[in-house]
Image 1 (cartoon, rainbow, N blue to C red):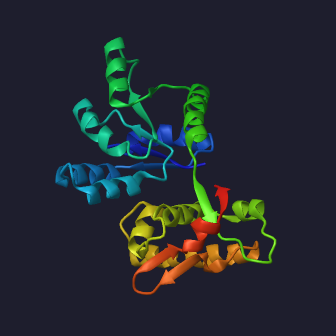
Image 2: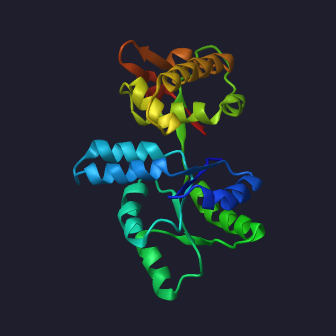
Amino acid sequence: MRPILILTKNLLIEQELQQQLQHLNYEVLCSVEMLNQIKMSIQEMNITDENQRNFQKNLLINYQAIILSETISDNEIQELVPNIQLNKQILLRKLVEEPSKKEKERLNDLGIIDWLLIDHSINSLREQLSEKLAIYQNEESNIIFLYQEAGLTSDVVQLKRSLSKREKATLECLFKAKGKVVSREDLCTYVWNETPSNSRLSQTSMLIKKIKKKMGKFGFNEEAIQTVWGEGYLLSDEVTENGLQISL
């Protein structure tokens, strides 16, 4: 299950919601910094600036839902939504009170499918999220192609179970590159949703090593992931030509 992101201007007022979500076994990130990064990226972006859009997309791709705090104004929401709804996440607006009919129509026009009230009970929150996130989970289709080692019996189920969330995200990023080299920095940004640091870059390299080891363990060719020294990583051409589909 992918984490939920709360974008806010005040971390303290989100503590109760964050605790409720964690009680329901959701992984949660509550962030002021990410909100500021997105707003800054929007200000610097031209309509044709594909690099900025890719930055925003990679920043948010690992979240299944984004909750927009009541601390964010309606005008800011109108500016934010087109730039954060690049990966078809569920968008939820946190509100102080039930919205009017006109406000509901405006939310729908913005692409926000529902709202959360501050005084929601945990039971109400559980059922609401279960309903809304089920739509996302049914539509989500992450397909990874892995080249099967000749002469070996591969165990797809065991491989899937052995992969961590970060390892799955790593494979997903490499697959989406469609045979092109992905730099270690871009891969790091995709997997960790933050600006690369030396520590994160090192951890990203370790993820590659762990994935290759698991692939070999369960009967897949470790060389399906290739290291291009000085440039980054890529999935070999054989992956898409002779690959085995694995829904992660």
